[in-house]
Length: 564
Ligand code: ATP
Ligand code: MG
Image (spheres, rainbow, N blue to C red):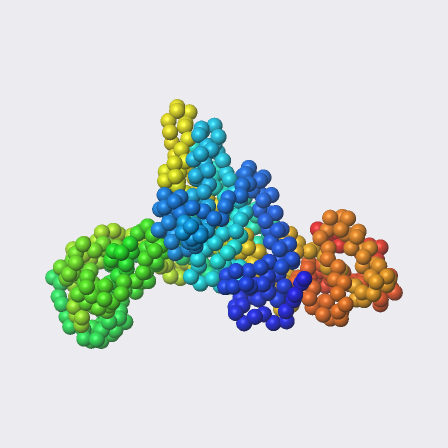
């Protein structure tokens, strides 16, 4: 059951997705939902095994939690709301609601609440390798962003901040080992904490053009952060001498930053305020960004504490501010409603001589001094960093590259232990919440990342550690009892006895077809056995990524063993 394909289905966009399908590793059942075929499953099991070995070695304890979970614990943690955009919900025949696990903080913390009572039981780190479900808006790229996927998730519980830091560091180090063993070049970047909330997190990235993440990095000092979180040392808006009173001026038909920057208005974008209006928790929120900057929605989500928000409709905006998009502003005296929260980007702090909408269609204001004229509820870093800006740490020029997020380590603090009562008694008998960390690896995504990083025009190039089989024996004739088949079977038995994963291609196919398939699937070593070479007392050994060598039959097994 290795159904290789000449062409990938049209909906496969990136190379690793195409190769997963073409090499017969997976098949799609529905968008973001896949079946693993035997070879795909073998490679997946190898990734899982590497993860288990390293997690066990680090002292983590394997458990298995249910994917089907009661919504109550999600309500208790608050994530029933804040993570509702990824949470799959279903009803049983008695109309009782359930959720399908996108991660398992709620379950493990409930377990810890019941099982851990004393500081003597700490530290603990529990992990599982299990199926997760996420209602992704855009499942795509095969296993990279699926609705159902396999994740390794681990959760640490500690008594003190120092101990929690050690647990975190241990996982950080283990992740490096895991990805290296999978043959991947991973690097860590500072990241947004997303639906976990929590205090601090790092993502492990595999550099790839097809990656969905953008990483801001500095070659000079090593600073690296996901663009969702990255900051730069870009200066605030320069204060100007002129600080006269606000003036309203007519701007018929002008509804963009660009239009206002042109004659006759000639207001450069960096002297304009962009006013955005969102609806979060059925409340309007105004967000202010400098005209030449872009709002970073992840940073904004972090500030309002939920990922569930949307752009307000023109009608909602009109009712609250009295104007339509293009003429909006936050200047307090021009707003119909003044009880709307205003989030402003740090870059606008102290800015004066600014232009913004007058909350009257066809009019703008000039001479706006942000701190004088706008009641800001919260200042925050809300803008997206762009390439070439000075590094926040050392001032050198920042660069941008794309990557695939394969793992994520978080310092959670006591958010979940407080919400779900995971307390322990300390040495003095005082009740305290356990300090938590959580650590995820996208197992199926990691498998695909291995393929994304290792391939050529002929197919997959597996590292030995993850290849579904490391050796493929290709007899050119398959007649039972023929000399060729006998030799192939003998080598198969000898290598198997030495613990090598060998597959014997005994299909009655033309040699060309067999060789092509073996390159496509990417077995690291191929051993060709044919009548011609047999007559010379030789077999052919072809490393997937190297040159073909003719080797005496007697030394064939030894030669192969040297590759490990
Ligand atoms: P992303 O930003 O890619 O959506 P995330 O931050 O939501 O990821 P986590 O909640 O930290 O991801 O999950 C831990 C790991 O699970 C991720 O590092 C990633 O490798 C994997 N993962 C997350 N979502 C998916 C998905 N939809 N399909 C496959 N793997 C996923
Ligand atoms: Mg996600």
